Image (cartoon, rainbow, N blue to C red; front, side, top):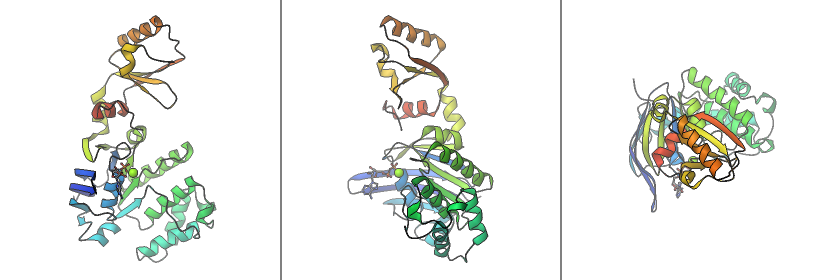
Length: 301
Ligand SMILES: Nc1ncnc2c1ncn2[C@@H]1O[C@H](COP(=O)(O)OP(=O)(O)O)[C@@H](O)[C@H]1O
Ligand SMILES: [Mg+2]
């Protein structure tokens, strides 16, 4: 079977900035594939090259066997792209935006399909609203709808849930999962580790324009084992300082090899007179894999 997307030694520079430094990937048909990496890792650049919107400086990309440069039309037709940036004609209604997209692919107005898309994205009541009147989350849904209009076998989503509320995130996840069950190949970029972990079968971790790890989500998680604790404290004892990453709520997340280590940590906190406001134990997750890989001690989010 042809791979859904094949990326061969792709590099891209912008002046002196190396956005991609030689990437090889092969995404099989039917996969739910994740491209995970911190901001600036090169995710959007890679998506733009796959979509034929940006040229690679070196290397080749094929979508279902179609070269994105020499066979652009066929490659583009095989692909639905949900871009990271929200760009629209503000004077179009939601329905017109989708119809316009259908026209771009030379399709007669696929009214029934557009109705179905609107329904699944919970946009039916907004069908005749102007794009400029929609909230950011609603616009994001229309972007997803736009990518689906020509029923592409391969769907690429560039950070579809960045900045959207929890409720929309959940409904988007459900919808994207359904598309994958229905046979669409999904490639999702994200800098949310939990999102990649929840959705993707395989994950490529991208850092500074290179794939630093590519494996099944299960294998990536199996590698870390162990446990982690999240502890809310004013500060960590000095011996533990290098091991804790502070999360967005101000708690420290610390990877532990055993429960015995947890006792050592609690003893050190008590010794320093540090009050524990909250403590939670978690299974190891992708965040640990990511930190281990990048060795940066910086969170990926
Ligand atoms: N059009 C551009 N001009 C100059 N530099 C760019 C351009 N697009 C991307 N870059 C740079 O390439 C690197 C990768 O960016 P990007 O692909 O957007 O990463 P990501 O999507 O993973 O956050 C960054 O250093 C970014 O500043
Ligand atoms: Mg990006």
